[in-house]
Length: 146
Image (cartoon, rainbow, N blue to C red; front, side, top):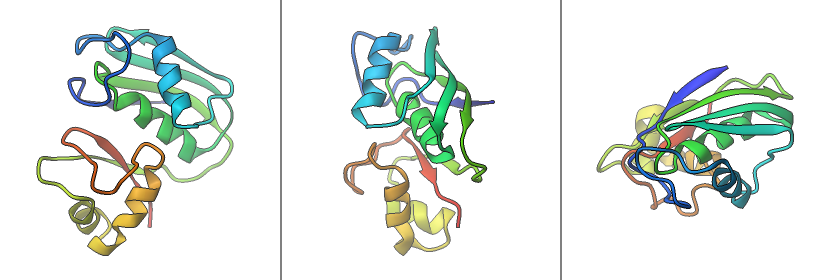
């Protein structure tokens, strides 16, 4: 089980949520589904600006992390508390919060030791990222191991 903090005043604007409260469960579920992520056996609940994610049926570690990021990078979500059961024992990825002026190349240089590995970060965050040049301050990204 883990708790992940997010900047609730940045991210995708969906539904009728506000910067003070996360959108409704139905809107959050639709946003995750839009990315084609496996939500089998997963239940969502909302408490203020916190999204609680439980369950999981055939969800990999990578999918779990992407679900957390898809939910957390929504305006109004200040945190995601998860207790998703995964099917594998893969290592958890590191998360990185984008700062003003960051590029995937710079993030790759600082986290992976080589800017030319930026494509690995881009791929680790697909389908939420559609273009390596479209990141924004406050967005949280997965940084793959190795």
